[in-house]
Length: 638
Image (tube, rainbow, N blue to C red):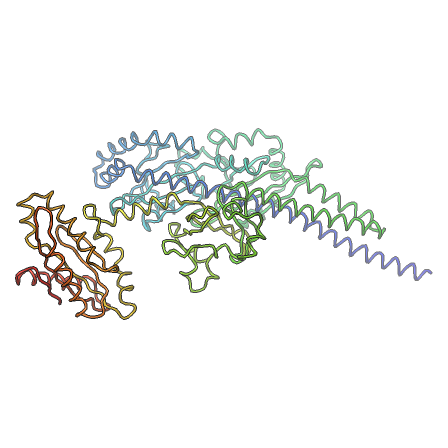
């Protein structure tokens, strides 16, 4: 009996130890699961908020580029003397200060122009401060003015830090500098509180990104953070967030806890990675999240600190204590294990519902996907495809990329050698190329700007912003710029943009590309005799005649004045001669209004593979000269 008792006691002790270790580990995992989910929800919200402001900044940039008065002043500024520059600054300020006030109401704190050399041209938030160089301390200024690429991200500055959206200014083919729209943290904090209410959000900045960058006379804008001596916060006199948190007794209590536990905090902060700190004070659970913020060089520069209640922590501690007390009773142990599993499943279901609610609050279509399989989708996704559940979509499709329309104006899988790499392919594209098209429930083609962010390992957040209206306007504008305003034929801009692809298309199946210069004979006499209005009508009628007697694949381009270029796909020079002769006769026989008959001379050359197209044009021009010199109204092929 004694041995059995000892053995039973020993086995009970071993079982109790195993269960104790299991419960202790389970407690840590429970806390980690809650903290990680909460941390990820804040990250998703933060990324979505920045993307929303990015779209708004792009719209402001588009409006600015459309302001020709401002563009012309910036162009003058580039070549002006110092005294003239001061006058131009004033003119720009007067033109845009009302727009700046509107921006301020929309949470834009800084509206700032820079010169092509990276110097401050005009700070609307500090108009009396200009001329200082920013290139060395602002990566965004370097990218916008050296690489001439737009860039966004968090960055310190000489006056304020901010979440910046910086764009190069390119006007009439000339680089005039850059402009930035900067959002203060107050705006981010407000939006975060709207989506995920908390005790408070605070931005703590590394000394390098704040105190060390500002003008000496603005260093009083920052004070050291209680959390760490290596981090600063904005002075409550300029930051409503700081002022609000200083008056929050719960946040002050949590900050005091941090101040007295510097060994724990400093070791985590030094990693410069996101982390969470669960705390129990006065029998109440709290969570302090530190979200890593990187600057435009992808270097850690700040933390968003989120203070929130974490009542689940008390529940976890209580659960652990109960199981330890009831460890000796197997029945109670099993019972409480069931309770743990049940509560864990309930918690996971609750977190899933919260994540779904967060996604449904977004204006864009938002999904979570590995690139092959969708795991979450918001209500906008279901509305667009007129489906009730994700399973209904997955019956026919695994990947949302299968819905991309194969239109070369947009990104689609047909452009890739390996369609499985489509997510990485889009992430490498510039924003202007990250556009896809999908057919919605309304049977209309919709174009979307696709933003992809990493959510966790091998899972991405895909945000589809519907830009259909903008794309339609851009396509109309592009078509307008590629056509001659008088004759509606293609113009030189079309030729320059498309000749490379035309050469590929017209020669890839064993055909040849022929380029012909066509010029109206004695057109000056038409203008001198009948006037330029009649001359314009002759050009329009000539184009109509050529189009009626041309083949579908023939391309007509107005090169200048009465001179046109035609591009043909041919099998041989003999076939080309037949096509050109048919066209020459059609023009010669046509009765033009007022002027009756005109003739044209044609000089043509066949493109030699791999030669510069300028050489082909030169030969065609020489052939045209010979046609003119030998009597006009004839065809010469060189």
